[in-house]
Image (cartoon, rainbow, N blue to C red):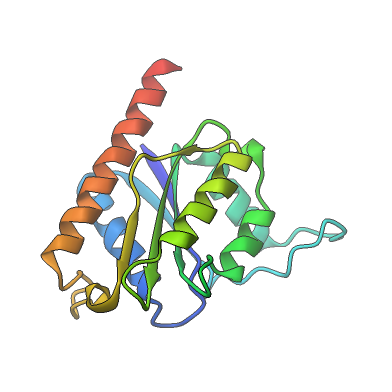
Length: 179
């Protein structure tokens, strides 16, 4: 199984990226291959359908999603929505990359939870012909604390992440068997 994780945070110490790095670690421990794209480090030009030449960064993004069996999208919640950085990356992708693939969404918010960004991301996933995972992960407030080892300080967050990842990987396996 091969998954691609796209981190839509645009800060060096992005909490949503820390959450996704923890997910990446948990997946590798299950011997699941992961491609991690951190949009803070893997910057993309502003999307335009008139763009003359694709860049190496765009090609890497498109290829990583196209080759994945499933995708995890993560974002900070800004003003009740997902990040412009992630939206820009998603604009480079389409049904050719997402069709029939399970997608798990995750967010981090300064408030209690970042559910608005997740429901909006799920709408985008549907429009890209992806299959939304039945679970999602949203952390907020004190639950956004991480130890120096990169793991969430909260056992509840750890459990929630593992639960959501189990749902995603089960959905990937089920869809692969159906093919």
